Length: 167
Length: 176
Image (cartoon, rainbow over all chains, first blue to last red; front, side):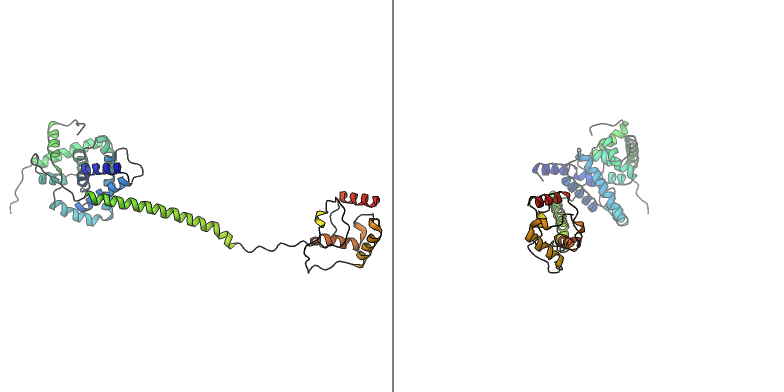
């Protein structure tokens, strides 16, 4: 492995690791998601031919790994996933944030899987619709339709005032 | 985002608000990742060398096995030429095959018969004129003995008729 490859990998890691883990957390618990992301980076490093576009390649690799892990231990992971969703928000706010991170995380978790995937890839992954279409293996029009629908659902959920459960 | 999508203002506003949030911090350490990547690369290289050496080992075995398994060669049947004093003509094509044998196989029965001995004595006394001029075929026992001694593998059958040899033989005989 040459030093420029290591630097390149380090750059991709700094830029994308967080979004990739967020993407993998759709299917996996936080620890399994981190494993999937690490494996994807290692795959990228050991690729005989470097992909033309590393970023979509990484998302696709994480997706592949995550779905494989999900299939391998679907029941166990789903149970852990429910616990993880409740315990840790997948998003983090900053002072400049215009939304509550916990609320947004919950709203995101409440979306349909296809909508959540497209919104994550578009907003936090910063991918183009064409790239998302390539990753999710569907048409650009479908991706756009899902994106619109996801945003609409999020807005509905986030604008709904919090109700305090009465006992 | 580089390419804004054709969304309604509310959608665009929500996009902006969502983008103000960042993914939660993760527990992947860069050093750990690099270490694992190095390990994987080393393992991959080692397995490649292992595969190459395995293939070479198989090839070596494949090339050596037939050599080891080959049954000991059967001893080639020895052609034994008995120098029985039968005249050999200079320049004859069959002269090479009439070289004196270096070793004699004991198992071959001696084929010297009284008729042959008589013929040999005649030739020694009178030269090749003593030989019958009618060729090989009707010479009886003596011819068979001569042929048998020259070509033991043919089991006593007379050698193939060689007109050139015969011509040389006759010429030689007339000259002498």
